[in-house]
Length: 283
Ligand code: IPD
Ligand code: CA
Ligand code: CA
Image 1: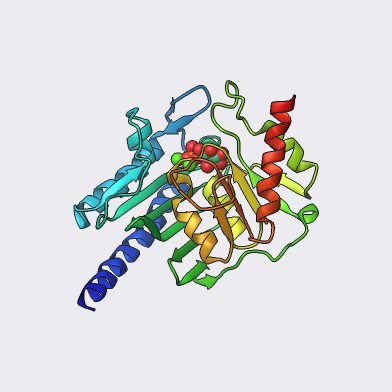
Image 2: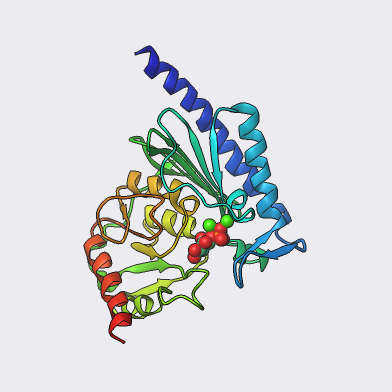
């Protein structure tokens, strides 16, 4: 019982810090969106700005000060240093923050106001809390394991749509789309021909949150990283939706490729992604 109480108290401290950090980081990004950015190319089309680093530093410094024992997995500390990111959850008993300081960097660098700050808390092998903040719309998505998903404090849930033909879906394309055959082109074509429409908005965490609150009915994407999905995966499931890897069963946030839906459309979307990818094999 005592252990449970301590765990609860510690987690509520983390919850407060998580919400403070995503909001503070979001405000920082919003205030500087119109300034000239320093852009570094991580690959031909994958960029990072000084703001990704500034926000990441804010997370790293604040967490290290308040919770020096916590582990942090954050995009730029991995990608800008050429490190490999861990492919498995943190060891038992360790709290891991999984942070995307700026999800939608390409949009941001072009002044397109569609981006977010995303942070999930992993503990004992699962995401227990997640927050995604869109500072331009002042939308804060938050979920706690077993306690529901919320947008600005109001409970959210996925859409109830059952007919794939009427579905509004979202997706994205990987940064190696010019050189890799796994580029989502045939999947995009096939699925676009069978649903109402597919959007490519440029921020995976917001795509997923938009599934969670019923604006989108589903989402799929190849080659995502744990920081793109950690927070939003919990937000989707707590909103009554489903998120899995491409097999359609089970979820591993380190697993790279994801299908997320309102639940009703899951099997159909999983099947459609598979059929679309087979078009490539048969082309
Ligand atoms: C990207 C965005 C984009 C998705 C890419 C992600 P970044 O994140 O979420 O929508 O298509 O796969 O890498 O690089 O802006 O943090
Ligand atoms: Ca991202
Ligand atoms: Ca990012």
